[in-house]
Image (cartoon, rainbow, N blue to C red; front, side, top):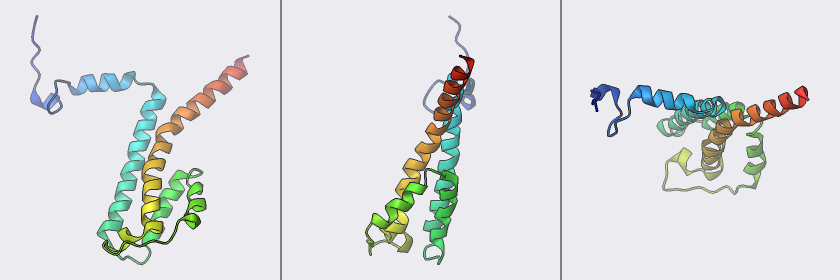
Length: 141
């Protein structure tokens, strides 16, 4: 048995996988899942940047307009949020700084876009590939 010499630069910290093995494993995952994972990672990165803006610039007079970027990115899924906002009570948490203290304008969109928006982009390519496969199957018959 020949031991393969692996440099520390080529492995992940704490495990013996090399980057080439990880890439080979990633390529074995179906394309719709890979595309969904990358889309959701990109969307979640934009979400983190926008949320960081709220925390770093507290009290900016038009901070709620920044959610509009995510509303535009999540269409048509984000339209459901407009039905939920009027149902949410106006509650404030006085022990937090201003944007973080607003339940209706910060926390509800935060959880909605953070969880639902990321899941939307994770499953959207999978749903589209299944629909396209179903139409392709019907057209061939």
